[in-house]
Length: 635
Image 1 (cartoon, helix red, strand yellow):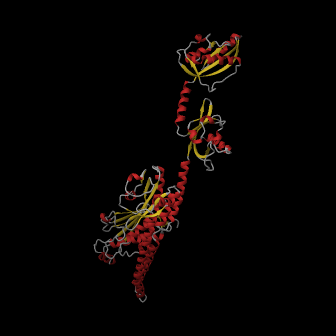
Image 2 (cartoon, helix red, strand yellow; image 1 turned 135 degrees about the horizontal axis):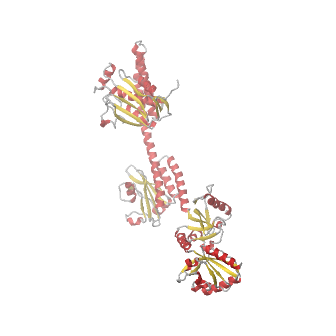
Image 3 (spheres, helix red, strand yellow; image 1 turned 90 degrees about the horizontal axis):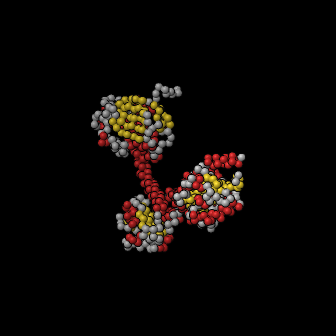
């Protein structure tokens, strides 16, 4: 029976993937399985009868005898993974990293001790690689047990971030890294991370920042890249902690610049904008010494806003020519940011007090922001970016102000023009109405209709000049109905209208009529082959040579074309400009009004040649719905 049990043990041992040896109470090997050959190079029979120390490195043998005897006196099962740094000696004298589990067993020979030996060379290589990566990461790394939260490892960078030596953290709870009294909150955050496998933790679900607490009690905002992994049957979580103090400050500055931009856009004059820029550079970006110069009428770059520190350390600041050799002038002329790590190297004779580093940022054609600091190399790329944002916002604000001033001047001129136009046209209209009052002739009705239309045009011009071409609202309009109504409002005499394709299109019902009527007038007045404008009108009035105007709805717009003499290719890019006309009596505003109305709708206009060689105006970007056989309109 004992032999049978021994054979069963040996059968089990031979099936094991690990090298197994049995040792008696004297420390001699009584059995070895075949795996010892793979691991140590010995045949099993070469080991039987030898002391176990034959497999121990020579420098450790004497110490091992004492450890062996102590274990035999008080044996207990010790599983693998005890985190001991062990090596085995092979037959050729080489060493191999191993892990050992020990178990006392009762055999027919009495109490023996089983040692299962495992080659951990691969794990050791991975461990070395892992350690190398751990130390190569430029941020603080802490590895903790994912179940218990116990810290098992930390790299050297934790000292830079937290002030702790890495060994001080091992064995402590991970919660000690975070602000005191908030352990439960942070534990819940990491449990959620493990459950959802998020990659980066930058804030709590409520948007609150994540902090670590240093050994000195300071709170530091961090971003944590946390990864869960398994090692030696143990689930771990590695947290890479990155200090985001600088990033948070950058974000705060961006938000503050955004608010400052709102104030810039509300400013009423250039001096106010300059003052706001200098204040923003001082209070938001912490550039204490700065000057904002604006271009005057000379033109020169004149200091308009100077911070107290700039005034105190550099005194009154000079004016510069816009085409001079100073850094201010060069930044203005080039339109590019200029940065000097030590402005004294310029040696240009300008007194800049204790200033060493300097930034010069143009604000378009309006001026330059000068920023200096007493430290050498004080500005970096982040400073460049933030200061550039400020200068760009200042340029936009100054452009807006200049545009508003120009618009005010243009509006004053336009209003004066509209008043003159209304006055000069209304007087002859009133005379014509007075003459019609005593007339019963049939043509009088047509003349009265025409005069009414002229009065309507005057009102439209006044509205457009004073209110602009803005579109109030668009609605679905029937293309052919609108076209025919507009055709009826134009003196077309013998000219003819043809709608090639009908449908619906979306437009402002008032503005679109101005567009069509101007195009129709242009086609009729220029449609005759006669080169003289008066001759063309006479031909139209007496039923002579006339023009056919054709229109149609397309997939994304519509067109208006005629079979007249057309527009020369060299002039097609100019016909929509204000003032363009071939008629000595024309105003040159008709086609420009067409362009303005189209652009107010968000449409594109292309001037080309029709199939018959006449003019063709193509409108695209229009919301249309062409009629087809499946299209039904309620009646």
